[in-house]
Image (cartoon, rainbow, N blue to C red):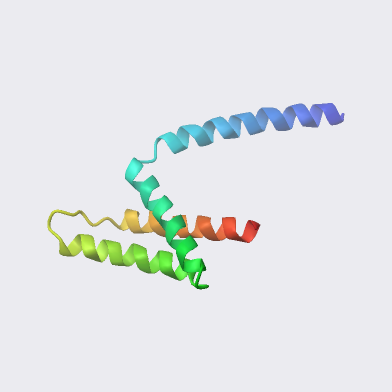
Amino acid sequence: MAQYFVTYFRKNMNNLIEKLIIRCNSIPADKVYHCLGGVILFAIGQLFGQGLMLAVIGAVVKEIYDRQHPNHTPDVWDAVATILGGLLGFVIYLGY
């Protein structure tokens, strides 16, 4: 009986991992960079106890900067990706 559950779990986990990899391959590279930037901003801000706040402020300031400069393209999804990166940094921080 236990072997059945182990086999079932492994099969479903493999399907889940495959779907996750396919989904990750469809994320545009610039959104991944914004997410990584959010993680970095969180890490820097966390040195002063304000990690998540710095990630959010950094995301908003970057989009305001993009809006003020004609050769840049502001995108609300860039800010969302940066903030999600900050949240990812927070989750990683909670794990340690």
